[in-house]
Image (cartoon, rainbow, N blue to C red; front, side):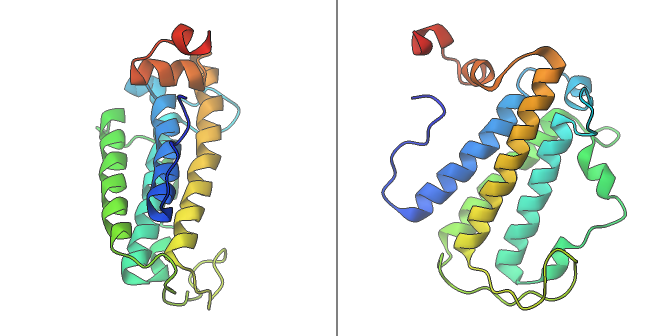
Length: 185
């Protein structure tokens, strides 16, 4: 059935597959849009589809860096925080999607080598939303990334529907090249 992760027996593959599914939801929301449409803010929020994809890619990059280095400073917000939710001058939706795909490949490579239950280095008191002394596992990090992606995939659905009325199922069908009529009938 479209939109469902297939039955998977091992935990690592399942976690990565569900994370990929949420990334796909964001990618589908931007399917077929111009750079200007993808960077538009058509709802009452300041969110754009390109900005959401760019943001979750940066968040995933921070978490995989933490997985590798154990350094909580990767979560510190810089002065250009707002720019992470917009296309920069000369940046395209294609650039943002490629960066997301590249990060996905890196995440899968990093996670393939990790003990999912192994304790990571304790956090330090760098940002207000992460207290010092927490000891996460790679499993927790993957589940958190899924939560982050899913939250923003929901935002992306609303933003896309505000642009042109298209919804997740029709966009998924178009992106994957299958007929909604064949599936829904």
